[in-house]
Amino acid sequence: MLTYRTGAANASSAARSMAAHLLQQTLPPEMAAMAEYYEQGAPPPTAADAAAGRYAHRAAGKVLEGELLDDVVAEERDRLADSEGAAAHAEGPDLTFRAVAALVAANLVTRSEALASIGRAGHEPNGERLDQAVRDAATLPDYSSALATPRRDMDPALADALGIDPARTLAPGEIAYLLNGQRADGEEIAGKKKQSATEALRTIFEFPETVCRTARNWNACSQDRQRRVTRCRRIRRHGPCGASGL
Image (cartoon, rainbow, N blue to C red; front, side):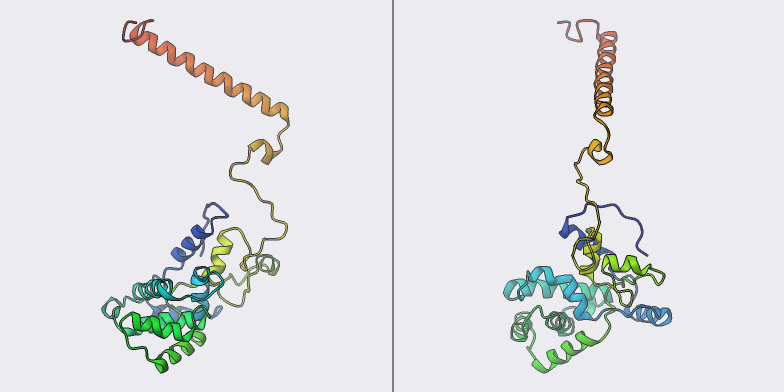
């Protein structure tokens, strides 16, 4: 259950970080699969869907390659190791192939560049093994991260307004958009009123000018009263000339 949270909208990077934090898996994959089976809720995303939501912004509309690709592969491999408690074989090729395959299945990297990245990671770039891993990433459910499942009693009108498909779980990128005050597809929510974080209360609540003038006068009197109280305390403590006697 996603509980109430307060944050600043329009901070895309912060929303993605919060989405990644909320999707950290706290159960072993076997237990997560068992929970999904008995719950019979929306099916979990594939590894390709999850990778697209998690890393598409890093590609910036292009494909990952070179050093940037190697960094993303290392990040995904470490995430898989942390999720599955796989520290014992974190240096082996299995996690590297799974990480790269998810990116290939998500169309974030070409097959040739994927094989090159596997070679740079110190493993044999086996094309057949990569192809099988890509097929798995595109079809099998991914239990390496927690699932964001829409409530079964969600109002259809609300789901439509937020761009949520109640029949499936949400990808990390979609959660980031929602946390950022947008629809799950990144579009603006129809009819939503935006408020600036630094907008004056008078503007937000449409106070008349007379009320604001009274508030400013009250604030000025309050500040003057505080200065006089502070001065009186200083006189009582040090005398009218202060502590230095000047």
